[in-house]
Length: 538
Image (tube, rainbow, N blue to C red; front, side, top):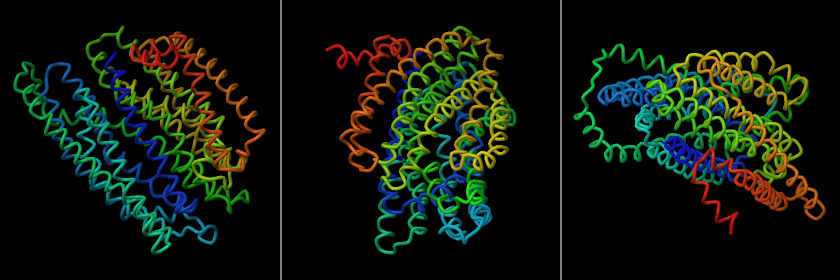
């Protein structure tokens, strides 16, 4: 159990830092290119995110599961064979993904921009930025195999460090290039083109870090292979077949959120034009799918870190048929997500206007702030989908992920336009919530039916978490009321920042105190939370 917590904390810390940096850089980026540049940037990254997942075919995480499985059986050579095959496979699929994105960019752009007479973004601009980011597909798939291999050994540091270095290198290049282009040429499309190309720079930096780890760990791995006594002489064809049986569902998990955004990308502008709000479509689209999403996705990093850490442990327990330990691990996985993500999304929803205003400016805050408030709770559904999918994969039910995601995506496709017609821009958020909620419910049903897992303890602790979150909301509401008497936090960016910091410190502190004093944190995270004694028990 300690491996899960330790791995979760390491990967969550790295993912959080990476996402936090991703949120922070958007502030100067938004100042340089505005809402129009943000929308153009999102247009490029949505298809790229899907292609990067498809081009890897879920192999990196599948390699993690594969290596963990055979390592637990004492067969290290089979994992190494699969690692080498995966590298070759990723080089090919990455190249094919690059061809699709580069040469299909113009066609995608023509679907996205329905009418160039409405708005300021042209089809040629979208084509250019999509092609700029496509080159990252030549590097990232093969690189990600190395991360998956290390995770199979329950070694999370290479993934954590490489993620952070990749993000730092990407941001430095992105902001530098954007600033230079906007200063010299004042061209938003060219600036965004360089910004999307920054993914290539980040990938190269990550490759360097992983190479250093590989050279350091390689002798120990080779020693294990030489000393092993168990060998599964599996034909290469069967190895690849088993790998693909794991990999297929993994890709579906990776592209779930980008697929929902892709539905928005092809329907949002048309639906907004149809209800007479085409003039604000670029503003609200970037507020939801780029700037707001940067904030919403931060709580989901907890689920991402947990899913990467828990998968090898679940696989090992399932392979050894240790049902008691398996149920404990599933229980802990759900409860860690709830105790950390629920207060985060509730707090973000309560402070949505000041959070958006302090980070991105007060312009259009009446629209953008409220949209973030509606979008924030969806992060819990994203997190639950990520973790439930990881659990299904750990207990060899990974194929069902295709069913749950298809069900959710169908809901999004069927209802998105109608919801936008009824509720305006909020309709796209409601459509995503319905889609993700459908997928989560299906996954939970499958986990219960395949493992006979009891949700009784999880539900009791969820109620306790809700009570603590309600108390946190009351504290934030009181603060907003008091601060509103002397701070114009709905008009001033500085005042919004003061309100945001005060709300986070007070609300988060109260929740943390209740969770700590009730021993809830210690039960889930172990003795490590005793470090909080220095804060609460002086």
